[in-house]
Length: 625
Image 1 (cartoon, rainbow, N blue to C red):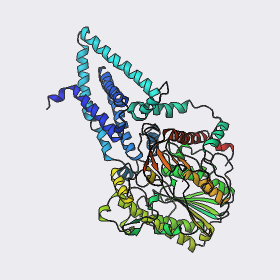
Image 2 (image 1 turned 180 degrees about the vertical axis):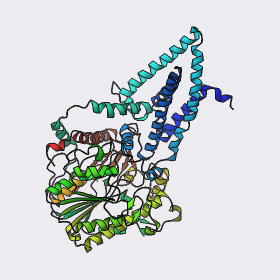
Image 3 (image 1 turned 90 degrees about the horizontal axis):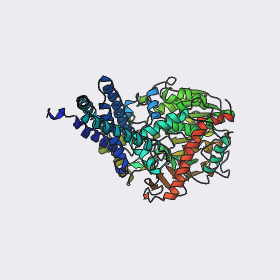
Image 4 (image 1 turned 120 degrees about the vertical axis):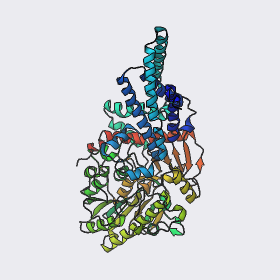
């Protein structure tokens, strides 16, 4: 066995294995009908091994070690990121992680969310480095041979280098803007990351001016519209409590498990004085929870670059905190975790909050999972608010139902089946039940403080809690729902607007997303944003329902109410390879390529146009703070 390990050519099976594992772990094997993908990766990886081995001495050896280490780490990062978000990692997310340890400091989340199979992308690493050293020694022997043998050797490697450069230019840069090349750029490792650097690094450096009038004209065409003034001002002058509920999927509302209501308190709330939107969807970017806040507060889409609370921390905004402060409200935020998480301590200043009550100021009387329990956060928040001058706007973010859904056993009240105990699914339902109990406590706290009758309570979920990319989760969820668990259910979160004294309870099926929360609340409270850059619309008077998607399902995906359809762009970036589901039945639909292409282009334009507004800080032209 030892003697066989002395042959450098054994590196090639390991390199091929690395490529197979990478595309297997990133779930791209089913797209390998795009023949260029494996061929290109083999060419680049084998070429890297061969060309670097031509050099002699330590310098060339360390160059290869460094490059191959970067490639290996990046492949591992792609596999890990793809196992949760369904797409490759970008330089923006790499910077996001390394700049302030957002994920690095959260090992429990990584363990619960990332597939351990991604570690297989590292299996070849020590072997390839060893065989490279053998190959380099062989190269040194060749260089000492006669010119008759050495010249063909150099020419062959020179030809390989030319082919690599041509392929890299053609696919990485796509000079003719070919759709087939775009497909490769979405799948193939080297060309994807080349294009990513070109767009997100070089593109920023070369960014020029923006045409504000052109942006406004584009918005007029693509932003969904609302007409009429139903319910305008029904909550005017009331306090507002806006609650972002961590990892809260809509499927739990009204559902039973093992003979028990999962959300009895919210179910009761829906019976009177409440609007319930049952086709409401998360519109998060790569900032996940923080981007859900950003969209809800401002009526703006986040993007796939970085978390908006850091990327645009110095921008001028005119979202709910500022709008209501202009109307005479106080504006306060509450969260039972550290204030620096997601850069909230800095971002909330430009968002317009007068004070942010975080773990540093709240009493950590009861801790479960990440921080202060939801019941205690609600209790302490109401104690603070009852001393404030009315009217006030309070933004609250729950925490107990955060992945990995670890609830102190003394707080658990849901009786789980034996088969679900210890599973992510079972733990999730347990924390869901706890958070629902916290909502029941909140209503009672508000009544005891004399605030309930004069307060509108808006509750929404930030993003999914059960990720379909995790096989064990998908299996449990499909069994629970009685049908395949897919994006149509995964991305759906609840929106509940409770207005004491409204006099009716109504379920509204209009498709909407977090980007629509601000304009909907603005109508109910009869306030005006005072600036035109609002990408959502009032769901109570909507002419249509349309939401663009970014995370988990891919930019270019959308949810269209007129066609009762959710569409997920193909992982190669094309509509042709995408998938569609019926929002009413959950069944797969045939993809109407022409229609879906129009909607997909509209969804992409919404994200890109909103990004231009944010990149150039255009809201500052209309307001100053």
